[in-house]
Image 1 (cartoon, rainbow, N blue to C red):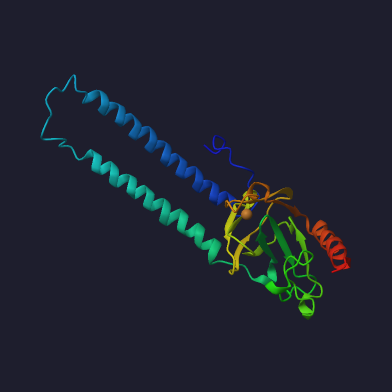
Image 2 (image 1 turned 120 degrees about the vertical axis):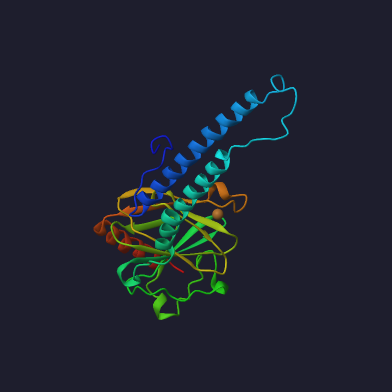
Length: 250
Ligand SMILES: [Cu+2]
């Protein structure tokens, strides 16, 4: 089933769990589809008018149909309680400590992803919507000491492998949806809200950030790139990007 579904590469710690659930759900849906489909064809033939010129007013006496319905509801309950709820709880409740994670902010806009890195001090500088300008897409207040070493990149997100990542998501204009398919991460970004997501990349690679929410005419081209790097390559990237961003006139 896994191969049949064409599931993309699983490159985060929780990806396997999500995939197992996807596979289980597809098995259940396949069984239901074949089962109900077969039953439908059987009914069409068995109760055709030609063979039954007069209607049977008593109807079905057997309880098999309701037993099957209860069984399906039971299986769905197990999928929900034993698989879906624990998986979701781990995503929204069991956040790792920020001190042990790579923490970045990502702000969606029509039609790009702005990535805010806190710089060497690990503190995000103050941002203000009034300061947003073409050369300051995040509205960073450079007079704030915590903002001195902050830098941003557009449509380029780099993260180190094998360390938890926390991304605080928001949006400048409309609802977008931040999607890292290989990480099995998808979360709407909502103006005025900061929504955290977390995951642990387990594979080095270069992939695309997609916007999974129809967010306007340019939605189709709202794609960014993300790169999971070795810790050494990540540090080098941080230094290089910080130097080029902070060295630029603002
Ligand atoms: Cu979008």
